[in-house]
Image 1: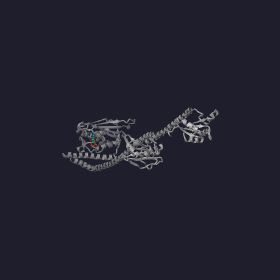
Image 2: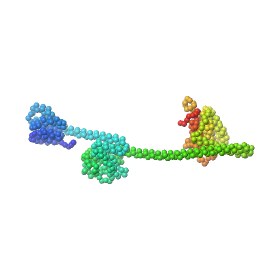
Image 3: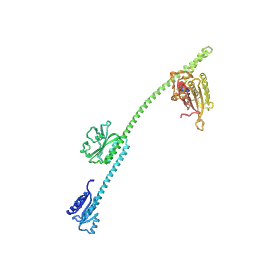
Image 4: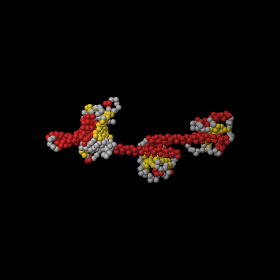
Length: 590
Ligand code: ADP
């Protein structure tokens, strides 16, 4: 629609002098007057032009004014054209009425007062102009609605697609199809920011361009210019634009708009739009497309971030897998080494037991033979003591072999813990005396009878009390306490007993509280060992607590230690807790 065109008026009269007079009259108005000397010519003109009013003479040869207006009314395109009849001869009431029935909006008889005709015409011109303005506003509104709808569609798409290529392809297709542009494309800058390459495109016929890249030094190309300046550029007529770079595949391009794709200060590339019509990009269009370009740029950055994150995840995953495999290998190697060690202990213990038994036999024989010989008895006694200690160690080695192989046999019987504690106390009587240590036993007598292996519990308490003696300086105190721990259920068979072996010794660093239960684990340096079963800090093979744990676990119980720390000056002491179920079998592991 041509907004600048003046409103048009059609005058129909077979007399040239009348036409001339009318034309003269309308010169003072800003209108275009088109004359017609016959009804048939007027019909054609009415189809061709958009008139705001027609002034029709009634008396004309061939087709009179009434016939002309009837024909105008019968055609959809001309039906609403307002008509003013003018007549000199039939100015009576009858003709007035006939004129209105035919569809005229007004009637004037000749001679008419020019001012009256002019004022009537002005009303129609005003009406016409208002209608035109309304139509124009309507057009703009529907265009804006389409633009907004497209923007929201693009926003939806861009926020849901995280794959960059997929995102750009869908965006160019959408913009091209919705706005009916000739060609839409997205160009991205490379990392060095010296080249811009085509990444996605969509043409009016569904065509796409492939593989195009432009150096940022190129003197021609609107896209390059936008990537250099970061400002949008519009060429209303590309043939007259010095920057425009013609592309063979796009011969119809008449105007081009390129917009920067930018997030903050970072320029990612350009959105390029081409049209086959000149000067199509209005400031409003550019504003909408700029908004779209910034949404696309943000979505591109999101896609890039997502891509980076996915890559980082992949790298992390492969690193974790690599480390897991390494750990797995190390674990298997350790397991092999552990097995070799266990095998060696088993073999060594078995091999040592036979000669030890022999030595014990012969030493006992010698003891009988030399019992009356001065000094010799004491010597043989020494051999026997050493041999007994050796046998204990070998037995410990065998115990740990069984525990490792999960072959420790538990012969459960009704067991009174006080009997076991008494027998262990007797075993260490001499050592306690020698080291001036006191051993207090409380609450053990009143403990209920439990289902347990007496021999194994003897070994367990032997190791715990033996350690308490070993790691407590002379003159210290050891205590063995017992209590029942109720599990709160009405059936007391679910309860358990707790035995606490505590001392006033050197204590254990909390960092070692778990590790001391591993076999061969010793907190001090092995080289500082002084040997001996009950000597202060006398080293052992590092098997006692591993065996103790094996025995407790085989009974379905738990063992742990509490100690504020290791200090040989202040001697904070340690307390070993043993929890055993009263009736077997059940696990107390929490
Ligand atoms: P070992 O033969 O060395 O005594 P154990 O398995 O019996 O082996 O004990 C492991 C380590 O735990 C010991 O070397 C010692 O460092 C520590 N330990 C055990 N019992 C006590 C205790 N009552 N007081 C302080 N340290 C202890």
